[in-house]
Image 1 (cartoon, rainbow, N blue to C red):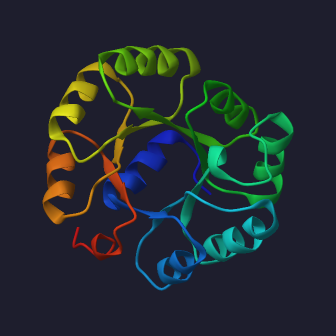
Image 2 (spheres, helix red, strand yellow):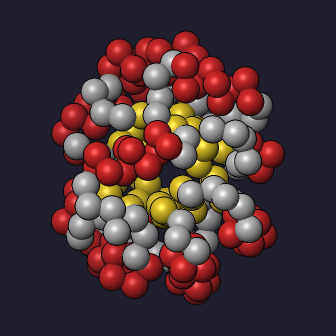
Image 3 (cartoon, rainbow, N blue to C red):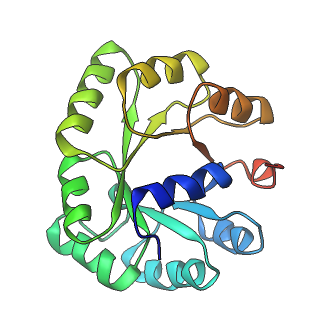
Length: 193
């Protein structure tokens, strides 16, 4: 069990490639991999507990994207259910209210910010300041320029996600100051650290 955000950040720095899972087949493959940290970006209430139990039993540090789970509302009851039954390390969300709910249940919270333009950046910064997530995930993560701009605006540790498909993308993102990257590109899951 991870006790605090410093311990979580240390794990991410030591394991900077996060497996972003988009379907059940990817769950089976990540269980066979050395990947330590996993983002669940899919699922339905009927199958989620079974899939996440496998990740938990395999010692994976995993986060559940609560906005993308079919049949589960990211409201106080849903987040309490996730914390007590699914038992992820934390959640991923674009919603500030979910960040607060996660903290109320003892879960870590990663807030996703889509950097589409300067207006989205301002809105994202305001949201992060008011909600106080533990980490921020910046999308798209394949743009070093976007990540550099984000680094100037966010004081929290950042993860880059979205469109990261090559080793060069990974190195570029890490070089721009993020502590980890998330990718569904399975070829990158086995990168040497």
